[in-house]
Image (cartoon, rainbow, N blue to C red; front, top):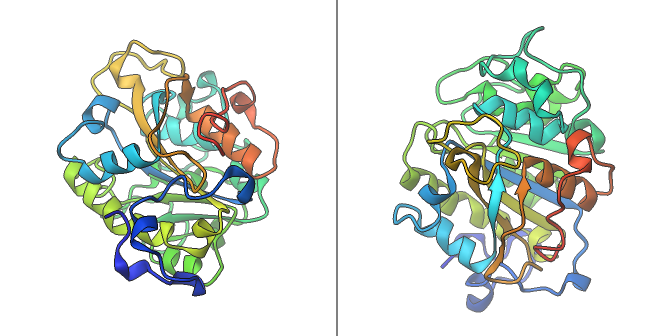
Length: 301
């Protein structure tokens, strides 16, 4: 069962029925939705074949089967940080070199480029295990290289909107969900240091709160789960590379209008995710997102 009883009745809505709890996607016609919120959840360092079909990831695979799965989705480069920057700014691969050391924010490891965060009237980044807001240094299980707002020094709202994960529940239950939300598990739960099974259990514990929220049930919220990069390959040129295993990651689209069991083999990448999110939220595409394939029609958004 995908949604736990503890999330029933959130936001003053009628409690979920057993049937709807077992079917998070496809419960609304597209015409009944008004998507004004998008949440990204980023996991770490596993290629498509390590996740899809894995016995260690029963929840993730049940979600992929009941919602939408992009089977030909690609990261942009390696290691982690270039992907986080590319996905939130649209910067092309040639402009990502400064981030390839996974550096902490500094004069030489930052960008003045516009980002999805400053495009929108409201955004939040929820960082698990982060001490303090918009923390620009690694600490414990928090890795700043997985916290993209910290790399945009012109983003004056970082200190207000880049917060701990604990605020997510309050925002979901009290109508405070931003137009765009970026959720980063800590190093154990995002599968970077932890196992696939640990990440799967984390998603099983966190996603029901989101899917039980009034925003999701009203048809205003789309959730996308992806991985920053694959492993085991030899190329850093990944955006359209369909041969390198390290360039191929799983991406799951969860929405009330996505038909259960949807699979798309169209070539998508992190630029596609950015451009599709911008289109859903009514803003123009940044950089390479303008020419990337849209995910909207494929997943009935």
